[in-house]
Image (tube, rainbow, N blue to C red; front, top):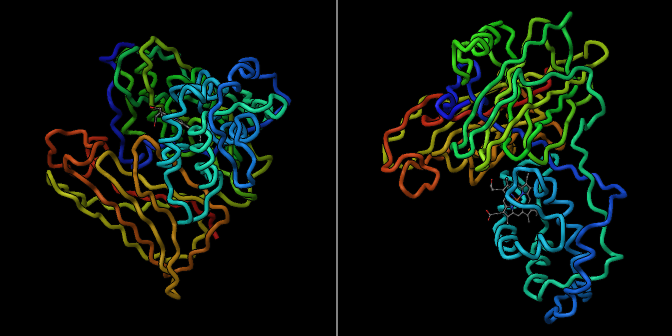
Length: 444
Ligand code: HEC
């Protein structure tokens, strides 16, 4: 595939909002009796020249093996290890030492580990967050010369089986063809249709996505089309009559996704998503070229419920399409909807493009209680996420769901794709803007 063939995806109205969303499912770190690190060998030589020691709260000296390695393994190496999209590995003492300056800076600013939702504004599963005391400890350790500590205290390296997280899926399907990613293309989104030809309706309990080459896959979104239109376009692409980009005419429904460090999260107990027998899958991937020619063929695994589950999840989308952002202005676009039914909400996502800076969503219950739903104070198009609540929330009929999207269409916004800024309106292209929230609900 040449770079000419690759174009930013046009998002069909059917896909409405989430065609370019990432779904980070929370970090999973599985410890296992793993092999000894390479680090331990290098270690002995380094301790000798350690500077004035840093001390933890308990007065003990802060060292890599005992204090820092467990933090890095639990919070960083899911993405920072060889073959992943993060720019370097943090698996060994040497790795961490080499990047110590940036690590102190980015953990200090809470840019790493990546987690965009404001802590305490809604409680989410799999929150990636270092404690204040952890951040301080890392900084103190670096300042004091990065003592290594004793090898015997080094925890085992986390084990990352790049394999199906819930065991062999009931159905495994692949991208219809491998994609060759040009070395120096800018990042791009592209979609593949995977015809399923199911003999009967199935009910999805969980899904897992396995990119074959995680260096180039920034994230993927999985959609479903039961109109049959997407597969017709795919056939045209395969015959060379159309270039691969998007399926604007298909009736797409977002059903899942993958991003680095993600963990498979089955639907809450008793819920399963119906996959009609005529449904096809659409895999949309954000590719991040690496400077080398790369090849990718993603596998998708589906786990089915034995029988029809009593309930199917329902995704409710609220959007404001009256978006009009003159150049050099900052504007707040609002959503204000009153629920005409009781809702049980188990997940939430916000969606906008590059000009958005801040998304804040809350609900006012009929008794006037103000319930925080989601706040992303530093919205970043490249770190979108489907957030799953720690406990489902009950929003009774009459609840007002309110959202503020702050758009910054000035020079100040470093993500502004236009220089000088230009007038931007609503639209599915990522050069236009959107303001959507999606609530994942359990029907009552
Ligand atoms: C969910 C995946 C993920 C996790 C978890 C994660 N990172 Fe990152 N990290 C990335 C990616 C991807 C980048 C590249 C920049 C970007 O896309 O924002 C990055 C960039 C960085 C950088 C900046 C490199 C530069 O450009 O200078 C540092 C430093 C860093 N991470 C440290 C950490 C530390 C320390 C942790 C754990 C406390 C951590 N990261 C956890 C994915 C992750």
